Length: 178
Image (cartoon, rainbow, N blue to C red; front, side, top):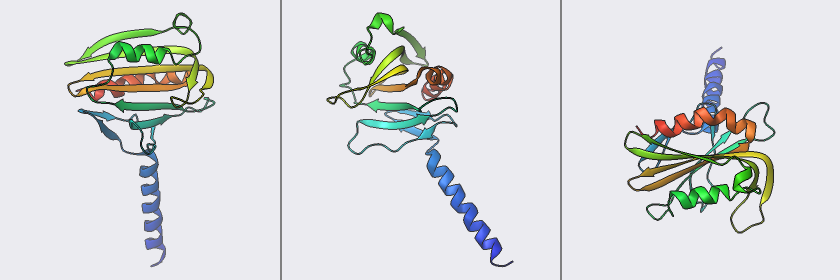
């Protein structure tokens, strides 16, 4: 009995550590904003040398593959909102008129947010390499205009998954601006 209790405590501690590690931090900072990750989304490690400031994985039981949420911050030299919205829409195989491209501006407190959405054949991949075509994908984006520069947040994944994640995505963005 004396050995069982410490062994159980040790196993419980290992399980807790592995669970917390797998989920990643609940909150994270990008520029001057602190965002809270939705509980069902998972924090993902960043590639070395990446311009990414945070990355999350979104899963659903019925999705063929997970969605990816990436936060970028480049400082004041970000290229502007319109140029980045156009670049995001250009990441689809079809023309802008065929991807249900939408933008919506919103002010949360004193912060301007431009939301972006599109759906079609997404061209996934690293700039400068041949893209992988992902039909039936969607993009949800948010450009958060901060005092230190804009934060760019992009969710890409199967269209149904992106649609079901929209409310959590917007809540995460807007919760980080208060």
